[in-house]
Amino acid sequence: MIGKAVKLEKASKRTRNKPARFESTPEWNVLKRVLDKDAIAPNTALPVVLTKEEQKRYRITNRRTFARFVRKYIKARALKYSVQSFEIREPRTFDGLSLDEGAFVVRIINDRASLKHNIA
Image (cartoon, rainbow, N blue to C red):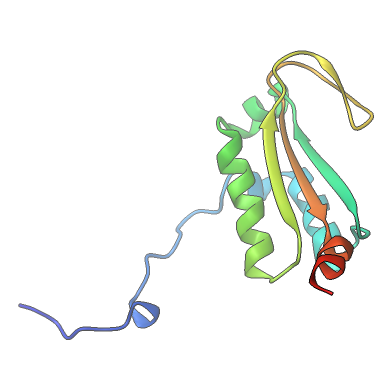
């Protein structure tokens, strides 16, 4: 049986049965409050770090999944932030934080002032 053709916008989508792992973390609740208040000043970056211990505790194995979750939240609320993600390969100090090897870093950047400058 063939159904009637529908536009992609109106096609039904699968609903998520279970929240994402990162969504249940206290770090996400703090980050969510910051993003909802639009509290990142122009031309600044907010690093979000998941250490190896936190990765094991929350069973997060891929930094891209972590970054994609943050990116989708920002896009869904039409916030003007950009997101960068990377993994620390050797112990070092980053943005004033001492990080061990294997930590995931997602940097949320508010570059609104520079965007306005480029457009004008």
